[in-house]
Amino acid sequence: MTNTSSAPLLRIENLRAAYGKIEALKGVDLAIGSGEIVALIGANGAGKSTLMMSIFGKPRAKAGRIVFDGVDITATPTHQIARMSIAQSPEGRRIFPRMSVAENLQMGADAGHGSDDERAATLERVLTLFPRLRARFSQRGGTLSGGEQQMLAIGRALMSRPRLLLLDEPSLGLAPLITRQIFEAIRTLNRQDGLTVLIVEQNANHALKLAHRGYVLVNGLITMSGSGADLLARPEVRAAYLEGGRKV
Ligand SMILES: Nc1ncnc2c1ncn2[C@@H]1O[C@H](COP(=O)(O)OP(=O)(O)OP(=O)(O)O)[C@@H](O)[C@H]1O
Ligand SMILES: [Mg+2]
Image (tube, rainbow, N blue to C red):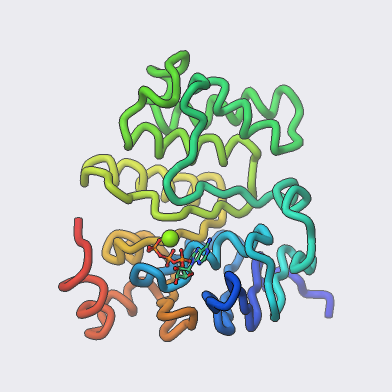
């Protein structure tokens, strides 16, 4: 086979992962094409964060395969995966509160492998996407608002110049206006920079409007998948994740 252009950038096959006796992922299949935004939606405890973190080997897959850009990374050490053009903005943001915005962004750049010029260009890109970070550049991370911290967490991930960006609940706890700004920045990164994105959200409405495709995760298993518009229109998605769920 010579045509690799249609191969997904990330392919997850029959992935199983557990914390001790708790089976969090029970055989998950998921694929993300290069240039796609894919949303993973599901209730609390469905296994969304586990799926995202297992791409980095934490927790390690008990069965199944994770293939990134044609390379099987199922058993690759976490620090090596971080150097393979995959970056993550984890749930809860986890920025460094005592470090400045500038230093937090620098930490992200250290995970990548760009030249000085490339780092400078990426920093400029991040500060253009998130002007609030430019305004707070010397300020300590811990003094930022929740929305600004989320922007910083995404900006830090971007500094490693990833091809695949993993976002875990970027809208959690944020006001609608800030959520819109962050989602707009993700759309811009996808359209203008060709960034591939996996976004985990309980906020199904926003995420499925943003995403090209989506998956629904229930108790460690994918129960539905389709285009964002298709999933948004399905009564069972609306009942479980829109009408009764969290809305913005
Ligand atoms: N470190 C851990 N140790 C033990 N069990 C865990 C751990 N992390 C998650 N779990 C369990 O694994 C399951 C999946 O959790 P996970 O955090 O992946 O869900 P989630 O879909 O991200 O939920 P949320 O929407 O609340 O963030 C849950 O039953 C959870 O209690
Ligand atoms: Mg989670």
